[in-house]
Amino acid sequence: MLGETTISETLTNLVIPTFDIKSLEPTIFTTIDGKKTPLMNALLSDVCISTSAAPTFLPGHYFETKDSEGNIREFNLIDVGLAANNPTLIAISHITQQIFMKNPDFNVITPMDYGKFIVISIGTGNSKKEDKYNAKDSAKWGALDWMYNKGMTPLVNIFFHATSCIVDTNLSVFFQALDSQDNYLRIQTDTLKGATASLDNSTQKNLKDLIQIGEDLLKKPVGQVNVETGVYGPVDHYRKLLLVHQIVLML
Image (tube, rainbow, N blue to C red; front, side, top):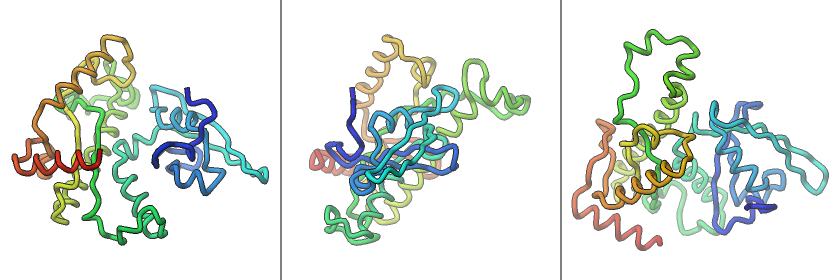
């Protein structure tokens, strides 16, 4: 479907994180960098395959890029979910970098002026409330049990949830500290269970169930994570109106 489209040709500025297992460093592909640096102007299909290559579920992806002078760069990539399953902070850091570099697209914002950021972070759901694991059971696990246990992958799941929740909590505190809590909205459900919590169940029934979960989520009150408990709760009516108004302005 993507053909020969490269990251520099996207219709809007994208930031897509991956992780290079050869260099043990994150590799972040962006529309802006793709336009400036030929060796980072990878095929969008290669980038998408790489950022989806979750360990134990899908294989790592190797590809090369080449510039007009014949220089070649190799990539050995997997999903960056183990380090940045919630990429919101990466997006904010990328914009901040562009501001420091005086990119004219962002010249209305001065460095550290985060109060002008409006962020909508959309999660894909998790199974936090399912209570899958406990310390007593895990104390008996060996290395293989941590990787695969009763149809689940505890180590991968825990890493994914941990990195995602830490980013959400930190950003909630960050925006509240700036008295700009209405500028940050995380849309997420933590009630997935069974097949809907699986990373690799692509049956027609499960896809329809996920769509229904998304539609049901839209009917619920606007929520925000409690920075002390990590649990989502509804925001008050006034703040909900502000959030909805800002979303409409963005759209």
